[in-house]
Image (tube, rainbow, N blue to C red; front, side):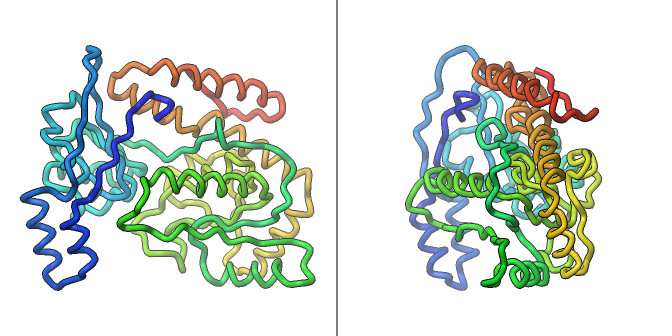
Length: 352
């Protein structure tokens, strides 16, 4: 929002739908469809659009296509906005998309495997926009890292047990911490960004103070069932904060494009006990750890900051870059130039 001087709209779900969801009646599916077709799932928002002569652009962001129902909170949304685009994370859940998805001007998704199906299904432009990370604010290549190992995201039970046994005993001089997601709130009492801001600040602070992060591909056995290998947020956020990432790298070809520098991910064997020893050996090599830390930070700074993703999005839509975004892109470039003498790699590049 700050980067593009955007105005955040926060729709509120109608009480009738909340009642249906809480009651868990056998008629819930029918009642929700009735609410959707009559009043809509969300209360109407009052939206005043500035008469600046510039295009009025509406961006909807959702975990799945179901969140596109947020558009129902804006009466006559299609007529009021010049461009309506969406960014959907778990974009493979075809049945979740509402019928009006074909009225979007553009749909962005973070994995390439679903693009052709979505284009054929809705007849609209669909483009790849990988996840990113706010390196400018949260990135670090600092060496003061008292926390040894953190697991970020889902982790197979056998690896969690092995690292807990090896690192978290009373006699252990090292520490392993498992980061757990905040419990989901279906009907939050606060705007989502208020609670999330504090949680995210804490997570990034812990990552900046951690030497090694455990992360696993979404298709690795023992993980939650996903239909695709997926370069999720954890890969960018662990790298940008200077963690050495160990685990099972994403097997999607996109992973080879986005994480293609030396030691971007150190693959562990399938045996948890052997993996523990590999991580212990890595922790004992402070010079290698610092080299990985600096390289991970620089690569994410120069290639994966969210501002670069926003630049790509606006360029595809033929929209001008806001002045504040241009300024922050220059900040990224300046930080990159300061870091390049320390760590240089052929893939490291930044264009503004």
